[in-house]
Length: 104
Image (cartoon, rainbow, N blue to C red):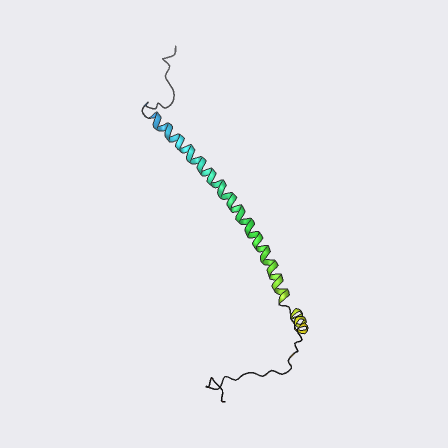
C-alpha cells in the first residue's frame, strides 16, 4: 500500500504571499514599461534616421547648386551681361612702405 499523500512543491507561508504577489505584479509592470520604452525609442531612432537621410539629400542638392553657381562659365557669362571687361595686365599694391597714409 501506499503511504499518506503529501503536497509536492514549495510551500509559501501565508504572510509572504501578498508580498510575493506585489513583487510579481511590480516585476510585470516594470517589464511592460521597459518594452514600451524600447518601442518608443525605436520609433524615435527611425524618425531620426529618416531626418538624416533627408538632410543628406538636401546637402547633396545644395552642393550641386553651389558648384553650378561657382562655375567659371556662369561667372564669365554674368560678367558679360554686366558689361565687364577682362583685365590683361595686373598691378599689385606694395606693402614695403611704413606709411599708411599717402602724401598730398
